[in-house]
Length: 291
Image 1 (cartoon, rainbow, N blue to C red):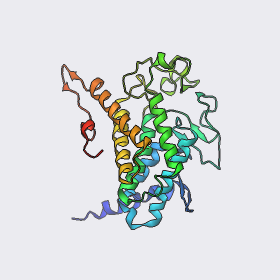
Image 2: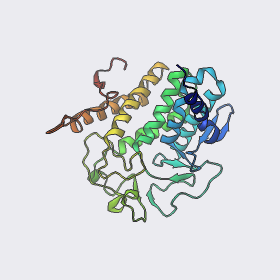
Image 3: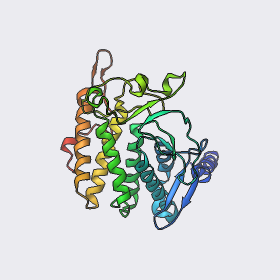
Image 4: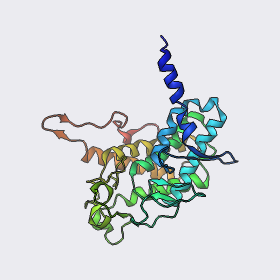
């Protein structure tokens, strides 16, 4: 039975992202869409992906909505190409001061970066929005362009660099972050280095999806999300006929990271028994028949 009050509530809430957070939408030959969080006029990779996912099922019914979300995929690709370690960005042609302009960050962020907290799930979110758009629309037009492939290459480069052990990268660190703050979740200790680790196949994440610093850099949920999205992007690439070095690297990395999760993050707890991974991930990807 239809609930009239719930229907009104849904009707008022469902368009909210489109009404209040689409800061810019340029519907050109290749569209661009800049989606702000709402309370801050900056675009987070993770947040913008989650804000747009509820509309995915409608893309084949509304061409303008379809192009809006393709524009967001493209904007994420452009932003990642500028700085893959940032978590939030200003609109490129309306640059405003960074959230904390006295942060000490390596590599130095460009002016368009709003905040430089490296979060592994942010990069996985770009992959998820890309493959979700393709799965719904079967529109492959953007996914063999230099722009999108360049952004994917940046993601894979960061992933490989963030697999390095602390001593392995000592003196040649690819990412450091420190902030003058009295809140320990807002900065990485050891002069921006974070806790020391050894290479084990997992990928470091300096910050969590909450934008709070990780105490231990191997954030397992972010690694699991990355495995799922590398696997899905590889499937997408194979479907559109792009089986090349980037495809091979996606496959190699998701298998390597998956094996590391099963080796180091599935444990037998003395009280609670086996600590399992989320069911979406619990696929032995090494024998995936789709790839």
